[in-house]
Image (cartoon, rainbow, N blue to C red; front, side):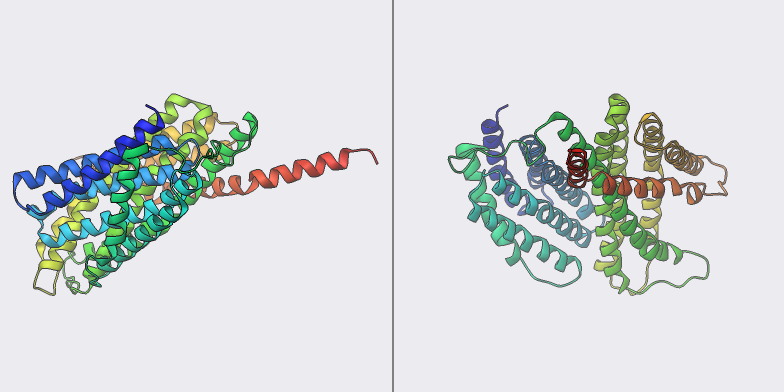
Length: 427
């Protein structure tokens, strides 16, 4: 499929998705409305895939971010259908705002990349970036409990209509007579391009793991575990004011799920030379884990929705049950995560770049997650949590990747090589 055809398909999907969600959301509780909202989710995911295919060779970072953001949006809008019936309007509103936040954050770099490729006039790309930034800000405000209405969504929605018509007319093509840079600024030589790819993959994986550790730690230990502790004998319920903290924890954990996908494929790119088939399998294992984790997070969304819709100032049994469901589904997903880490450990052991001791610690971390997940599924009581000790392998991998990216930065390496060549010249 050519760029022109892919762009025209994406333009048609933009316009169809706009109509499908608009009509479907106006028919709540009706089968036709549910079908149209589900169709919108499918169209949104297809838009992300088409844009990813077109933009990835030149702007891989923006392409991956847009693909994951659109995928998260599609998942959340579909989840809103189920949560509206099972948990109420409050939960459905939370996932809708989270979907808009994902769309806004992922689309800003996408619009800037389109301007750099000259697939959009700069003024139109700037309008899109500003509109999506305003959409993300409005969604964040709504999630924080600040009512701003639909006004922040208007510029981004109008941009999507214009962008859809433009794509339908000419597809992904330069807006002027010039040609886009097909390399995206990468080195022209094959060796230089390979070094840059490895460096970008290490940097993306390391930074993603660091951000995940911060977000997951704050959300899990700072909010979710405190709510779960309210179910302990003799513990008092937490006040309703903690509903806002739970919503923010949900947003943080959804971000972690998105980062899981990005880290999975960054590690695949970094370790592909050690075994392409195994690296691909490892990436899909972690992607599958991210999907299961996102499903688990919907139980926390339901808990937050019950708190938002309820008239009590205490956590009731329904909220505690939703938190328990989150932990149960998450533990099942950790089976895939453990397999992923075992495969990454094997690839790291085969890689010439990764030290053997780092590979061993990563494999041990994977074995720990597998042991804990299997132990949670057996009928007998499982007294220990091995991963609370073995998780150090993930931390070591994160630190090593960041150090590797800092040492192998292409510009620094080129300057060092140029300096050596200059010193070698005769006086």
